Image (tube, rainbow, N blue to C red; front, side):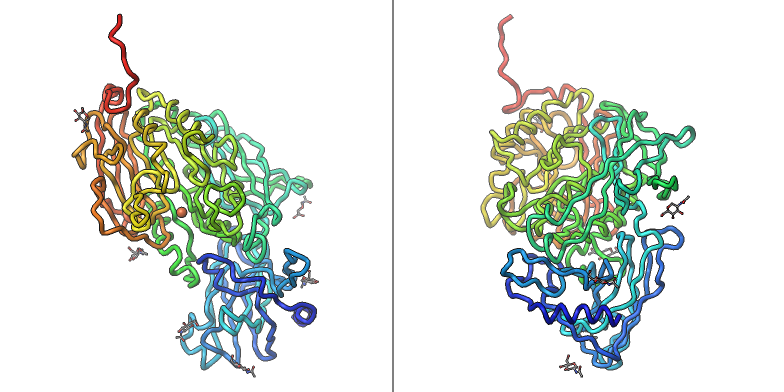
Length: 613
Ligand SMILES: *[C@@H]1O[C@H](CO)[C@@H](O)[C@H](O)[C@H]1NC(C)=O
Ligand SMILES: *[C@@H]1O[C@H](CO)[C@@H](O)[C@H](O)[C@H]1NC(C)=O
Ligand SMILES: *[C@@H]1O[C@H](CO)[C@@H](O)[C@H](O)[C@H]1NC(C)=O
Ligand SMILES: *[C@@H]1O[C@H](CO)[C@@H](O)[C@H](O)[C@H]1NC(C)=O
Ligand SMILES: *[C@@H]1O[C@H](CO)[C@@H](O)[C@H](O)[C@H]1NC(C)=O
Ligand SMILES: *[C@@H]1O[C@H](CO)[C@@H](O)[C@H](O)[C@H]1NC(C)=O
Ligand SMILES: [Fe+2]
């Protein structure tokens, strides 16, 4: 401890924090902490200590710690930061330019809590005890007590370091559909690089032989981040991200799997055992259930209050998805995944939160503004919503069956469904590379075998009554549907689902602003248009609707929720919207139709025919 203080003090004498290190943009809770201004005010009679020192002794990757502290000069705005790695004095910023003095600390806490959280009398007694939940994030942890509030932090005391029993353990598997229907991919995180151990998956049917499949390993460095905070105080080593490709699966069959790392002395480090059901064959007639939502984010089960108003619905949504997991076959999280916004520690915490889901069913993602957008980096929008990640974290942490994962558009088949997933953070307009992909994807569904054609994207390319779109007069992302509506119509797209707007809304079947059907709950025969749905209420703070009555809007809900599609067979689809608070259905409709209804010619969807014989 003394040595740590000495190091910090010598740093502070050498350096002065510069105002160039302005508060990072954005409303991420961690961006409220002016960590770059932190100074040292170590107090002789103050202490903070954490127990137990070893976590996860039963092999679990999440555990609780007690943090006890005492500060004779306590104040109402004192706070506890959780740091990982524990040696915060080792985290000194490198200046972005030689004339900029680096700040004292170049590491944001991975979470924080006010010191008075569990003891309202803290200000008088100076004593407190926090219960915090930690997840295995590879490095050790320490806890630091700060006075001066979040704006002007003064480091008063630093705790002992604590650690998980095996900090490098393979954790948080994410399943995703491979490039062909009979391939499942498993992506996970560990602390084992390929110069230390060979990553692989041991897997096989419920009963029968086990196979081993090798995994590829990726990571990314601070230098691949595009700006602050990802490149500065938000940077944290992501460890190693492994992906294995489990091939030649039997349709709808159940498999077990576990993750392994073979150390070079022969020892194998195993994860726990998980299971999944392989995807159906394209066109296969079986019960198929799909969950779709956007903008979920993360929160902390220990109530770390930095998240209380950031993604307030995310834990409820996660819990409802877990409750209904036995009746779910595949999940689409269509952008704005964890809102790390350049605080990279949050990706581990998010993948831990969704582990029960993503380890059991394919967890397919789309790219949103909070994954990709950064000025001057080729994103369609030049804003700073990714906090400097510029897509790198999302593209590495999750597998998608795209030709190029940096261009986040892809198609995937699931039995009677064909999905086309667009990337709204790259140009989609007519003439663009993505437009060609979208047309090809829509055209490649054989509708007799895959009647349910679904278009997914993050931003609303179709229709939304969100007040921010209404104020622009567009009721969509500007330029959203202008190019695409003729494709949806030509290829008879049934349903388009979006996020980005944090609420729920369903339209009539619509083409060029006009409803093509007056029906509201049971569509029979040709749809003649596309039903557009906003399902952006996954968890992030809600978005207001305009008070204007839009003629295509059939149902609006200002609440957290998600959408579920159930295909019973080639002729019957059930659509449901469920709230995250209780998991009950609040809006629904059915589609009943035959193949000839898909082929039926309506406005602008049939090539001209000739009467010649
Ligand atoms: C006690 O805290 C107050 C407010 O944070 C500060 O102004 C004062 O200097 C502190 N006193 C000592 C002895 O540290
Ligand atoms: C606890 O600290 C927070 C942050 O400074 C403050 O807003 C709140 O009023 C405090 N609560 C009590 C009971 O003092
Ligand atoms: C913490 O990091 C600094 C800088 O890298 C190093 O000099 C020091 O020895 C480390 N302290 C501990 C306790 O590991
Ligand atoms: C192999 O190395 C690991 C990590 O260094 C160690 O825990 C394990 O005991 C070693 N096993 C053998 C058989 O030497
Ligand atoms: C689609 O259009 C056809 C012909 O215009 C009409 O008969 C049918 O009712 C329409 N479908 C729906 C669902 O309204
Ligand atoms: C989460 O669910 C609980 C239980 O239904 C509910 O009381 C609470 O309001 C929900 N939270 C949010 C932010 O909707
Ligand atoms: Fe968004």
